Length: 577
Image (spheres, helix red, strand yellow):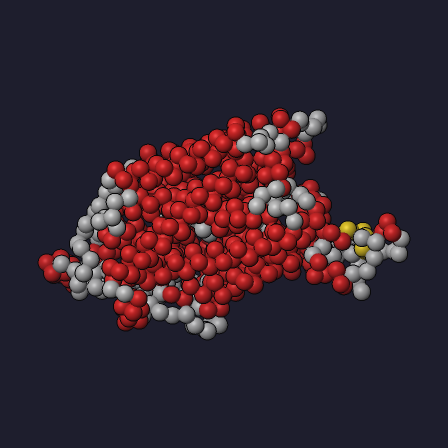
């Protein structure tokens, strides 16, 4: 039986482990800035690692970048509250990697561009490139503060660490090594932080299983608690999670996150060959599968541990996001340094997402917003210095926004849904350019704007209805029968005495009930359809376009403009075989 309301705060060993993670991260930045053979004083070195990065560190960096602190805390909470259906997001991971490696990545690799949004300028025009860059920067500036704030909030409430002290300190370390060491420092600190994440989660899995009484007991309690659900094949798109919503929806959301995202493209282009980049993508899928599976299983272990006394109903914690750190403080308090290792693991996930974001945003701001508007080209030294200044500025803004996020309360979830508002249109615009030779700039621009407006309307409208209590999602049953007898008696007397007022059912607009997992898919399809139709109506076709701007999968349907050697890679957009 889990103990009642036991809060275990950090001891000296935990602080040593946590501080060691921050110190090692800082030293990596110092090394690449001052002691490495190749200094970070050119654009290629600072943003692309000189295109000489190895498979292992890039793979670890990608894994760390896509598993944030929100994921580490949120996935176990999802399992505990709604059951295991979300685990089936992994069903589409392999297909995402194949699509990315053979449909999208070859285009970026042939062009050898620094910013993925340079593609939009080459394929369409400067206006579409600006739209893509602004969508990306908006998403990251709102995403990074949440990535830092959510784990900081959870741990401040269950470990005694002051939120206002730990957040700036951790962020300053991240800004420090990202500024000094460029992409190489980001990648190698991500590698260290990924190892910390794996170590922390593995330790929690094994200690959690032991505390519950074995694998079979974990499974038995979750089966009895109706937590095990993997193959709900209901096609209803309004159900929050079914096999289809999580597998199909995740395919599009991960495709947007991996195939066209600046962070992903930047790292893959840092590899010396396309083959090595594809190997990196394969390792990324294996790493993501392992981490997500551990987070999902930890959620089942937490339910098995608290299956007779729900800590949220008990009042020990206030939100499901706090379940994992609360659980760790219960099971790991007897082992010095383990709570510190776990906190380091979760903050490592947050730091890696932040450092990746800062480095990627710097590349986009410099390449897409500053460089095209410079009348006189900057020297490599000037460009390198300017990018370091940009990292400090946007990093400082992100730290300040953490405290704004703190005041937003219920709007945090609404802000988090911004990812789909930008991911869908961007995936649609890039796909329109790579797979539809007839698409033109007007089609891409209007398709992107219509798509973003539609998903923004659906997302904001849904969040408002959820805040009003009109839209609710059924949660799994929790028990309090094993809690302290006196507390149960008091709880029941208060609950039974309270008047229960049923809110009358209110008709909700159909799209507001759409599963959030489908947002990216709807956004991408809308951008493609609208963009293609507008392109046809505005004279799409008849334009000379280089084959390298199109995905290899459509090359077989094209024929060269002429037999001349100079024109063999030029096709007419209406010249399909």
